[in-house]
Image 1 (cartoon, rainbow, N blue to C red):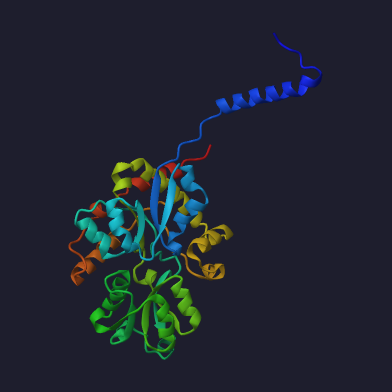
Image 2 (image 1 turned 45 degrees about the vertical axis):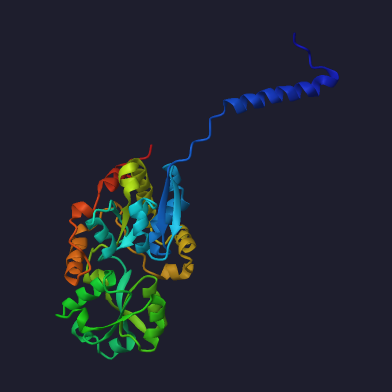
Length: 344
């Protein structure tokens, strides 16, 4: 029997109808999507990490149903043991013996994408800096004039030592022919001012900061010494390589999408994102050189082999790791098929 809604009970009828409708909506609504796999990524405050930060800020990782968690560190090499154990999933690294030795000893980590290379058409993201007065006085007109000079490095086994010795070799010299001074980047600003060092390797934003002091200048851009050489790479650990390859493919798709946005240059949006994660002044970012990245994610494997030959001679490597053991191109190959699909 249906009671008519008249007089005092009209409000009650309306409320009952609304409650029935609300209950029906609540009962019939789609369930909340389950959270996707968590991917733990090493993050450092450098411009070369920009594609990772762009992918996070623009929702490219979320589009792939990934929960990306950044783990902030001071030195990327410190993350290698965690990557090997699977506590971390993704890290980025410059050329360094540590991860190559780990692979040589059987660790399940691999380079999976480019994260910076020295494009001949690009700007000097890495350079050998020289004391301005030496250059102006004509005391560094030739590489042979490096003999006996005080050269600042962080350590001679890494990429900075490799760059410097490649330059020295052109004049028949080695690192043994210079006075090596090991100090952190910030200390080199004052060291140039006090004439305590003559030469320093540097990467942005330190290239720009050193030049701004007026006491140092770009002497040898690395893209002139080693054109197209690999500077930094993205590495996967065992979780994405073996246990959850689908997450690895989706991560790479988001990453390459972010690389394309990064390669639009110093747009307002890109600068704001980089400034947020690097804690660097936007004006300095606009004046600094940003590293070149390949949109297809491929790397220059031969340049890594050349570094290894140098490192083996210096005693920094156990053995040379062949390309098929340090480089896994399958993730960028799969991602390129997805990122290049025409939108419907």
